Length: 195
Image (cartoon, rainbow, N blue to C red; front, side, top):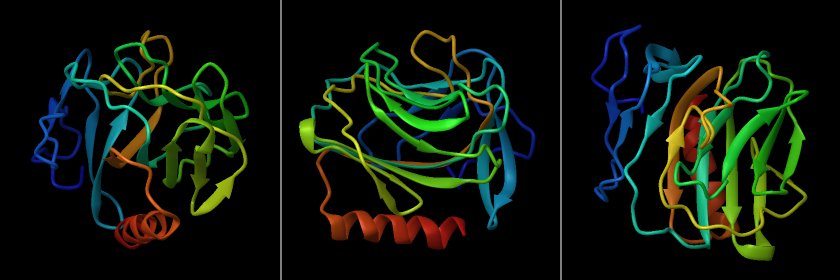
């Protein structure tokens, strides 16, 4: 999201899918705002309250798939959702309670996260019983379960009840399970770009 054509503090009405697959996001509600040069000279999108970005429905992306996030969550509220499948498949990626980062699929797993308002690189591999969850390059134990994605919502869960108070810098999604070396390569790219 670092190449968006918005000014600092301006409402972000849409984000184009750079893959060319047409998974563009648009503002559905009060929009998130641009934070220019928010991290390492790169722009961020800040979500507060009811702001969100939604994609249209598409053909389901079936497992395996891999998602990378550069994101932050503020201390309060503690259950903000960074990304969900707006179509209702329950792939919420959220900070809850302590707060903790969690991938929620009716179960899921989480790792301690201190809501320090700093951006972190989060990696989730969805591959049935072989799922992985990584936090700033460290792999956590657990399994992501199984679900397809039919759309994306950034900034809220699919019900609109849990809103993110935080920022998103970049989201990268692959329609396959990446190897360990490929994951390390993408995480290194994100780390170099976002600092």
